[in-house]
Image 1 (cartoon, one colour):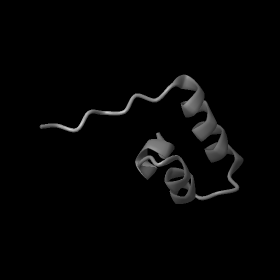
Image 2 (tube, helix red, strand yellow):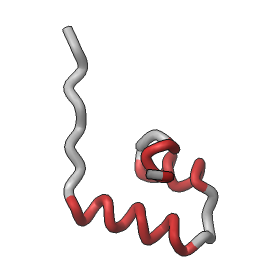
Image 3 (cartoon, rainbow, N blue to C red):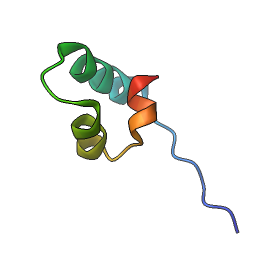
Image 4 (cartoon, rainbow, N blue to C red):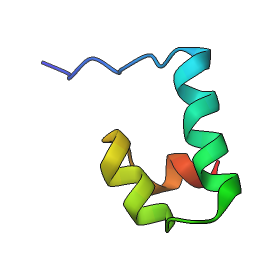
Length: 43
């Protein structure tokens, strides 16, 4: 059986994007904090 994909709300995506734009943390740190793949942070 396939694992169901998670659907992220626009507010969640905006929070991740703001963290990435700030540049204080690395992409890996942001990804682990929000429990997502680092590639998703870059996108």
